[in-house]
Length: 208
Image (cartoon, rainbow, N blue to C red; front, side):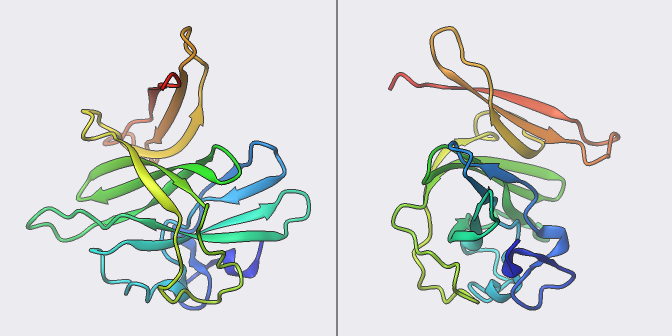
């Protein structure tokens, strides 16, 4: 793993803090590349863009693409998570990218997860590296980079679902009419008293 993608015990330096580092990887459809999900929190050298205390702005995460055979860093792009939506009177919250599913060479589904005072909000975005700046040689972000473009696919809370702690996504079996299924999984964090392990099954309309 490239040095800048390795976890650290602190926020200092070019790496990510151990507890908020990348949690999973996604294999490309051709099986030649492994794409690291965006770090759940900006890595140390990038936390000034914007300041780490500013939860009202888009937050930059790096998405790293590695050669599956050699482990070489092929490219790295900035993915910006949405600002934290904190209700009035709340003491704050956190938001990150908890999972990614690669659709093609440039396109991805990204799970953004927000946690505020015991409540999770989950949105699924479609994002692309087309036109984005390769920052693999940048020790620190400057704020002038072109990030990955993204668009909202579904907001699970707005859709009436109780999402839970979603940390996994995968395509499931096809429906009889040809539509594809998308499976999202939420774990219980080993906290059986207040959380559940839940699987959400979504239908993807492929006829448009």
